[in-house]
Amino acid sequence: MDDLSQLTAAIAFDPKQLIGIPFALVGAVFMSIGAQMQHRGVGKVGENNAKNAENASLNLRQLLLLFRRPSWVFGSVLLGFAIVFQLVSLGFSPLIVVQPIGAVALVLTSVINSRVSKTHLNAMSKLAVTLCVGGIGIFVAIAAFTAVNTPISAADLLEILTILAVVLVVFAVVFWIFRKRASALFYIVGAGVLYGFVATLAKVVITRVFSGATDWLTWACVLALLLAAVLGALFVQNAYSSGPPDLVIAGLTVIDPIVAVTIGIVILDEASQAPGWAILSFIGAGAIAVVGVFMLAKYHPHTAHEIAEVTQDLKSSVKARTRRGSSVK
Image (cartoon, rainbow, N blue to C red):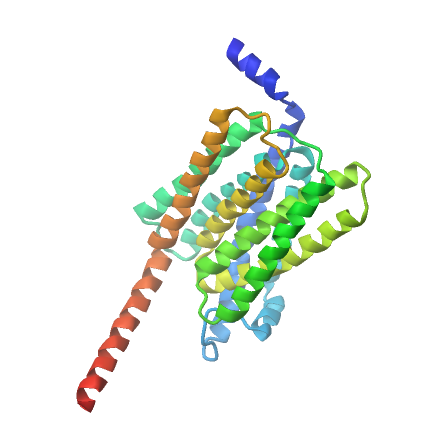
């Protein structure tokens, strides 16, 4: 007890920062249901345009058709509520405490999707989900008692905005060049990275508004937040069109927190008072969660089926070319 008391005193633990945790949990529930509904809407649009589609990416016409799908619209409303609850949680708690809690949505989405699609998760998929949620759970449990809210300087803001500008340009260029051949994993990674910056900038804007700082840097953060959110949303819809919703949520609830937490630790100094063992635990827990995402991408029943189909198509194509080559000779 003495050691625990000394540790708590050294970290200057503030019980008020735990208030954001229940808000983050409710937001995760809305995220899970909203993701399932949006995936259903995207799937309907994909079915209606399957004859004209040459790739998994959604074109402009398909994106506009989403607004005519009640399931997609309802899912978007739920995701809006999820964002509101997340913003409230960020107002109370450090970024590295509440952002990873979104992993709860992974469990809910996996259960809901397996029932809706009547596809039972195999043992490896269940292990992958366990690793994702377990890694994030360990991270949050430690961060809740070691992280602190810190003042955000203008230099911190400029550093975040500069990094985001580079990320936006890179992803926009890569998306434009490879949009016809991009896989679900590409869109998931892209959306996760962008949403990590969205969460960070939301935390920054909330902190500055509460402190009365509404200068041009704050408005620059709002603009950057909107740009990252729009591009991230575009990536998410394309991910839904080429992958199962629980895989999409797995990527978002792991990659998004990793990016946000990295910024929170490196730039915002939210872990400045955390002991060395806590930092090592953060790294280990994050690694466990990332392994879970890649396992889910590989062993998920839907993904495995798609990989088998692609492999079969490639084999058939190679055999056909070999036959044509032999006939020419």
